[in-house]
Length: 260
Length: 203
Image (cartoon, rainbow over all chains, first blue to last red):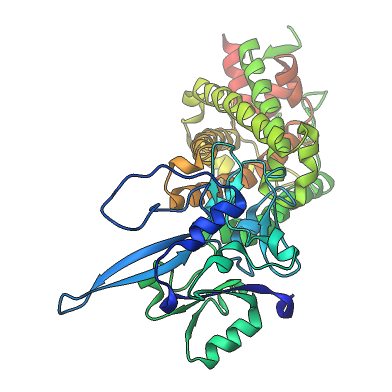
């Protein structure tokens, strides 16, 4: 799979915050507009929604001299190589991986358990009024037809660079960029070239599947199955070694505890 | 002298079988949610969404019935005496071919501990179940923990059920009669719950 994986390189240094990616995504995927309110910032909407598969975060930062810098970063599903959402999804095919490594979803197969919401290391999946999962699927319908995802097509500054994952990594490294997500979670399908610490871009510095989800799926699940069959085996073993304890019909027989 | 003594009245028996039936429903509808390995169990409910719906309804029934059963016996279970300590020390004689005499009351120490576990587990399964039901209404960290605790209690619960079913059927013949018909044989009562038997006889 590795050499076939496709994905994005999000070069944060190139982003001008125009939000063409947001608009193009909505147009291609026919997602309705969310009604928002002015909250004194250009960032809009303030979070991913069931109708918003990607968005630009506007991060303001003041330096010691009081000069303010703006950072723009594209937030979306990062198509983890080891995806928490797929790990917990109980409905086969509701979340699936394409042969080029993209994590797609199928609303028809989603059973609305919302486990993926809890298991995502980046808090990406959203549920709308239809009670079905929604998130960026990297326009896999476009990719299948040999086109570039809508957001990347619309991006005027080549912030969103789509292509083979290995080639994108090699190119970014050749240009001396600091990469985020090369090896995390078996490699993110969407990589970031950042100009600072990941936290400054609202990204976890050491992304991982949430501990409780890991304990459930990788520790409790096998131990639980072992525990069940262990209990059955213990009962059978007890039955054939110590045996059952029937009440003696004569009432005064062996066993001791019938003596009054 | 009648051959039988009454052990569980009609109300207790009905409640017990409500708990049992709802538990079995919860088990079958929840297995597929516990792991994709058991995805096939969804078919019993016409798919995953059906299983989730049934799981929610059965969960409410189980929560109410199990807690009613628990509080109905709370005083009996929450009273460990010296004889119960003997039971714990000897593990009820279950690991001995020739067990020593233990003066158990209506419920022995193991049954009391089992009852208390059931009560606590029901409460926690209910609380975590409600959180898992509305995951978008709680902080993510709470829901993550809740999913883990729900799964952990489920595992412990199922293991307890295996032991419970074994001990009340082939492990101790004659026990099931009490839960089916309400009455147990005198010799059964004298063997397994001598202190309780003496109380009943004394009346």
